[in-house]
Length: 294
Image (cartoon, rainbow, N blue to C red; front, side):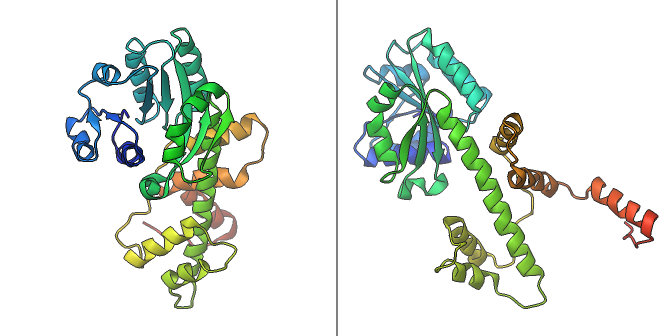
């Protein structure tokens, strides 16, 4: 396992507890320390990682998407042998994954792309894995996926890039679900009724058609901080929502709710919106509506 952040470290632990032998490496040497007590074999470099694994090797990369993935694969390629496999478990753009798989073919190295969902709860509950690449290499690596995932929690999606494609759309849907809950609870908060949002989130978890794990997490968040007073309303995006909307444009699919959810995140990062100011100014111009001055 290369990359021992929040995901990589917990995935390593789940594999270790499932009986696998796991060599672990991170640029921060201290990141491997908590895993040693669980039986992990620490490596000091990528060369050391490869040297500690018997062929055919399976090297799981869990580093940020983009250049870090490219750099890691380029550094690994001359160290690996024909028949070895790289499993890329981050949120890479599926176009990049297809190109990387094609490039690795020249060296006889296989690439599996594993869209990975489950977050920090994956250690306990398992990770949902959406896997692309060559089917026979997927079968060879199946014991890894079986350990990481809950029952029925992993599946083969298709050729190279298919796993990351499905995860991309998964994350686009996630944006929309989060936005839906956000708008609903903001409306509840704005009501003239003195509503207990925590109680409502707990209530809806019992038999309601809108119950979900995200609603359970809403209940948990509101229990810890009922007014969310300790949190700024600033929402980042890690790229998958943008790629999903671009794919919808390219495929002529009307993904209107997904697009709105992405743009709502952009709005959350503005202290004040020039666009909103312009709307207020125009309403004043054509209708004499009042504006609030700075």
